[in-house]
Length: 478
View (cartoon, rainbow, N blue to C red):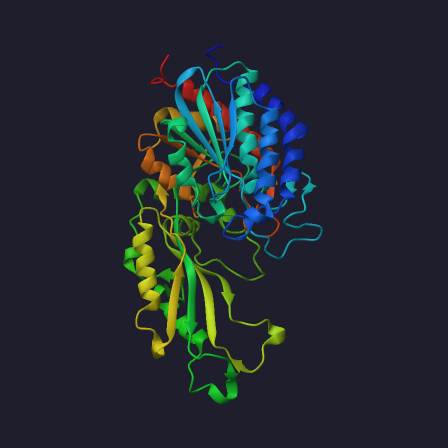
């Protein structure tokens, strides 16, 4: 083994060949499997899709294991399977690499010839559910280690964890982390490959994630539907009551969340990072969304847009029940209105306390003494990354320049990765590199999700480069 850094030219050629030869064909087969996360497929174990997807991924990994590596598919009773790969290293230290392989549900609105379980390769884009979120992560993780081995470059011991419940809030992961504590060890660096990118032109490092409170709000006034002409004006509408309750939480004219307890001061460093990201992206902060002609964003300032989606709470109603399809909507006052509440929380807001506040706000003293309940799901706290060590900041900057041709960017993400807050608590001394391939229009969770293959290849090289620089950092053991 030598003390040199990664040879970028050889790295690009190695990773490109690996993607062309085996990674993309395996991702094509993976996309075909409807292994929806348990929250969206309660019969996931009986249906067997999760196991099929895990078996496919594990088979590829076994074909590409390096000397000394140990692979195991771990499955605790009643929990989704987890892929564990232990890769011994030449440096007495540990790096934890994380990804997931469960998927979001289908959704509607896919383009012609596209579908959630129909892999389609168009140019540099591989369409289909789960390729970018987050099926590529296993291949990028093991590919990065294979790249370092091809150049005979020393690195720390690496542990790869690929879970199967992330899209359900990672309810299974804490049990596995505790179950495997001795085998995981104490990582000094955690690499998470389940995040986004502002563009496909440079490496994007996530500095914060929002938390989430979600649940179903049910409003009932009468026991069964009645003629609307007979009851309206006497029986209050369950829909109107639901709207009144939600107005306790959100100011409907501008979307501002009302309770001050759900807001937090934004650190000056994060404001500056948002400003730099907005300057870099310009109109791309907002114009990559599929707007209808004439529609406009909530605010006009790209910096405020960036802060809104990363450091401020926001409400969305993601589903409803009790409302018939338009073709079957007769003149009936409905007995119940149920809506799915999804509230994003700023980093630093404790999720369980926020959940109690939201539940009380939506259910106490309901209008007209209606029957109201809020069925909450497990809440997730957000996460704010610890300050970057100088070696890691230099590493990601140099890696981005080497493989993208531009410096790395740092910004917050609006989504939630429950794993990060949990790991931050368990390993407070660790450094974190959180990154991903979900750039403009990639549309994770929605229709027309795609993996931008060149970005996945460059990211794989950046991960390898960072792992190598971790071994060379000044405080690394000889």
